Length: 168
Length: 425
Image 1: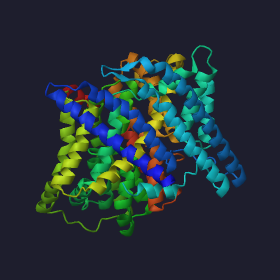
Image 2: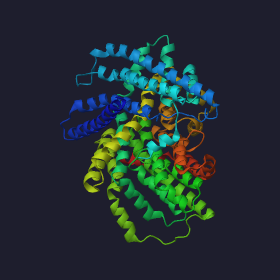
Image 3: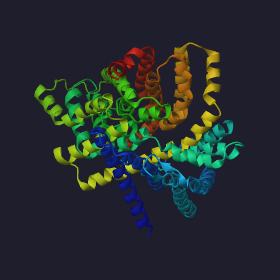
Image 4: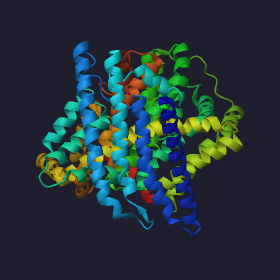
């Protein structure tokens, strides 16, 4: 079940990026030949915030979001774990609050449209609450795993992160 | 503003991922403000994404990943090898030259440093170069990648500071080459002293060099085409980013015939993650940006600085020293996003061109990634090479000193930095 969700998330991320490339490319070409397609850039712009959040989801899953572990590395293990857990809970509360206010804002924004394209601006705004909620869910799962396995939530496990980077 | 700063530093030093530290700090401003509704904070996150120049970031990240999948990187390595490996410290010279070449197709110093450490590092260590020296040449050398267009840092600077990205790109060319010369000279002097790579003295044959250059022609033409596209004003930086991706696909699939459906998916997948990590910071910093403007932070800091001196060049150096110190602790993207909107309103009334200042600031900020205690490029290179940080630091000092000299020189020569943008745009 989880692996299906991960595959869907990955596929959406790749599709969003590919779509943005094509939309911006087509917009540039058509503008050059004096037949600009206005909605093309607007749509790319609207997809961009979704790409950001889907990339952020993958980043969180792979624990790739950079942090500074230089100062806490030397802490005794129980203290470090406690601090790490505290930070994770704070981040979770932040994401939940953002999601809550984001929904309220989206309802306010329903009427506003985007450029000349007729796309509702709500498609952009709603990316914030949905993105934050999904980030929160992943973080919640990571907190559960960390508590059970006695690991860190935000472990910037350098070897692991590097293994990811190896493929560049 | 004070609360925001305290929260940001406290969370960051405690090990919170930077994106969340920025988000929470920025959000605290809206939660505690009596005048601004909280939903405006969420609004800032959404509207931070609605900038066309910012679309250049995902496009150039993808273009950089594509270069590695299409045989372009490998041809550039070949090319650098045949050109400079005969010099003293030959393999280290190859690193510096490769960073310059890679600068033309990739915009990220960290990606370049990691690639070189993996591809060139083991060979250098096997040839007798110390790990520290290898790491230092690769990590500090990658600063050139971040200066030569396309540069992700300059795109971000242009985005937050509302400065022409085309002019910034053009302004990066000459400083990039000056850094290359300075670092190659440093390698040459150090290699003579340490006796690295002074054995094979045979100059390369012209036929061999020209063959390598010809093989890499599509990679070498690319940065020129990119600058022509932007310079002519016909295309914006974001559009050129999309062209770069399409170019890499065409070259990779039809000319080099190395790009497959599978490697294309890999490039997309790796890029999505890199983009997510960078842009989550950008989106959340939208809230901090609002707070900075609302609280008139630039004006307050400007008053403080102008209380010390009114001499423009001294103000620039004060700012650069401040940025350098921040750069020791804070990652480059974050610094650009937070400090650019504060400093541009300070330097512009003093008659300093924001394009000139941008090159200086970006060089200093990116250099922070190559120094302890917090240096992303340094950590990437040292862990790939399995090199202790202390060894790296000792060997990196002459390289960092050379770069600092270049930056001071560039600060005094706005005419040189602005020569290309003024000539061409």
